[in-house]
Length: 166
Image (cartoon, rainbow, N blue to C red; front, side):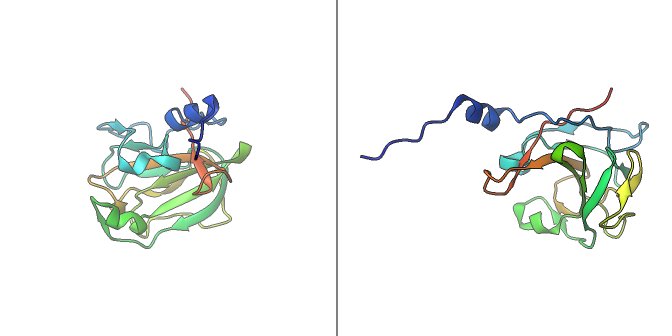
């Protein structure tokens, strides 16, 4: 007879309530940016992507480094976008490694707009690029994911609930 696996309390909490980031981040766009909303759910915010935020901002909005760190990945050559998972591999984004083993990843950049390269050190507030149409999206927005490596997760990482400075 096969037994059903039992989840421990901390595993249940991690499924429904993402762990909070240890770092405190700045908003990834200029203070005067018009924001038409913030979305936290949807099919692209599940599993290791829990905790990600979509800021509904105009196309061409400057994307700023949310915290000091080192650029570890830049994808900047995609021009395709659309409202289905068929476009998931067409995303432009920048990944920054921060202290405490955390990474931030602003996404949906305009093709060719990245102003940094792998190995660059960035400071909070530095312009990284601008928002554009790339990847799985149904309207212009800036997707921000903060995560840490997690060897126990099938994808190898786990999204965190982002803590912002006031």
